[in-house]
Length: 275
Image (tube, rainbow, N blue to C red; front, side, top):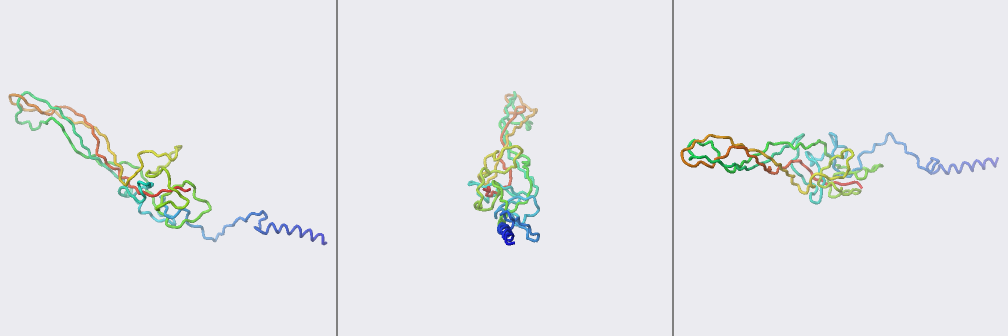
């Protein structure tokens, strides 16, 4: 009887030692069972001061409407284009903004002479020489493609999460410098962001030079036109000579319009990349 008791003790005590630390028998901590009555985790892990667009009617919890971006797109800041600068006037809801160009040109009309001294009744006859004009084009839309989204700014403290934010995530911030764990984004300063087309290489700048000042970028157009001088009867007295009249014909000319800006309103903000 004593032998049996001793054997039972040897079997029980080692087993109790395995269960003593975590109670699982494996040496691993037990899997936590969610408490159905516990308060759900609220907020997000993005740093305070983050600015982003949302496809929502109201900003999420911990964010507030960012009025500085209303009616504007956002472009990444650079040393030459500091954060907080604005370009152009904000767009109204679904506004399709137009622009026009001033234009001027000159065309030389050759002369024609007639035998006979000029007489009266020739008021409708044109003079030879340079003909100049100044005009303006009809207002037209640049047809810049937009979508209106709600701009919000993070005003709450970040809430740590088990799953970290993904590296290389880009985010705008209304801050003097990037928060901890973030660094200034490379290759985006002074440029508008465009979604990547299918199978296209990423991180490829294209188009014009980056914005380096709060001035809107101007452009012009080349144009061609014609001037037609019709025929016109004249009255001549005897003698010699009647000259300096504009020759009948069609005369082509080409010129450049005055530069004009496409008013695409922007807000410049610091852009950071998650490390």
